[in-house]
Image (cartoon, rainbow over all chains, first blue to last red; front, side, top):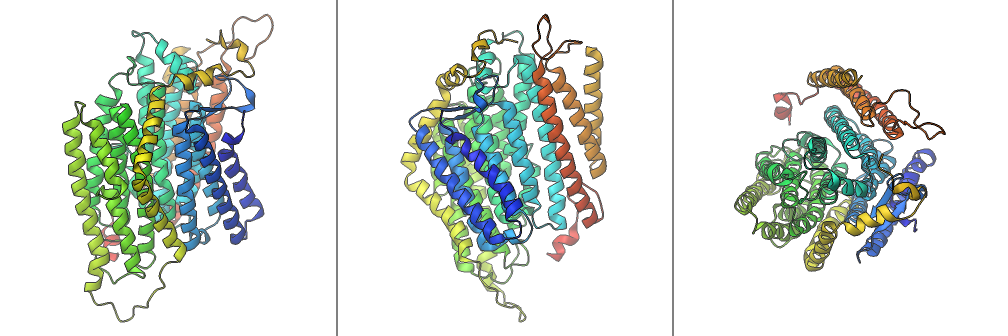
Length: 515
Length: 115
């Protein structure tokens, strides 16, 4: 049993206390360790993704306890893809933080950042539902700290909302876990998948309630309408790079929905029939429409991007709610794209903010380094709105194609295309007000010229755009990989077999383990 | 006993939700605490209610109580305790900074005018 799969969790978990305890007063040392840690994470994640790419399922039994008694970590194609995406995003966010000096505006940024990474990595890798809850809490408690980093009254107030909403979500998660345990007597995902099939059709009340509660919890994380209210304020008020890192947090919700509703409650399971097509699909379509309308209606640039994130999560959810292999493959492609696009946009918003009195969409004198920032905004907005030639267009095309033969085709095509049009108008309006019209007014006489942002900041935001371009150029390979991932998800037998049948402590008594 | 436990969960949840909907930080935090108590009792009951039975394997005993929910509840208690401490600190900071303890966004036209 290789120990590499736990490294993405252990490494940040060791680095964070080290940074707090040993390097508290040395921002330089903190930066070096944090950056080296992120680079090591990328290497490890890439290695794991390479191992899993041929369909191998990496299993790690903590303390060698056999499932379902012990907690297992499982790395399949989906998990390793998500941890690789997280670590790549973390690198660019870290570069931006160092370049812009955000980590000097408050204390313990790097330690919280590492804890945040630990929580996200754990949530992607765990094979146990209660452990998923614990990692959700780890990533949330770190995100509370990051969200109010550098303080300020508006940010603190938004932080209170964010924390309270997520605490409610956690409580709901525990209710869901309690119901699942009461119904099935296990919380291991693979074991649950076996037991959910054994529930007789006339005793499904409990498991139905549990599956809906679980869907609600993940929908809160993924900011699906009507559970999206926490997102606009918290993302807009959070520090720019933190909001960029949060772009992966909504994807944790999407990941959890994909994992649970392909493995434990697959679409052909009688017990939970109707969940994804009757309930999730309309909510996803409304999220998409509402998010993009929010883009058009936003009065400030940061809120605009926050609503664009809601819209793009709606798009992801539309693809997930199809619950077909093609739909999930398209959703995965779009998840990667929208993480990169959302993060790039939040970084660019922060670039704009650094030399502008506010982010309100009104005409103000040009910002420092306007040409480069405007160019980046243009590219990222094209990607987010889903215009050719960047990856948003391909992602959207894949979703439209996947929905073509389903009964929802008319609705999906209408909403996706309509919402895209609205978002194009919204982004074009914002870009022209912030960047073009700035030259039309005379700058006030007392205006001191400000230094343009650090080149590392541009490297970070530009790097994300380049990554998106690469994701477009190699779209064929990416799409083939996503299709293979999705096929693995829809054939969960090897996953279940390797988790349940691998020997470990106590594995002899698994035969009569029905307590 | 089932009725007692079930109604305890129900009453705690109902009062908790009512307090959360007050939208001022102090009642909301109290409400959150009540909700976490409710969910702890609920989790505990998810392993079936058994009286006077040991949670570990011992010789000569045939009825056992399920130990797993107890472990889950313990984890949940620790986490919710920590989370409550965090939210109290943040809420206190927000209250001292803005001089009001409303949870939702203020309907504030001054802010936009100033911007």
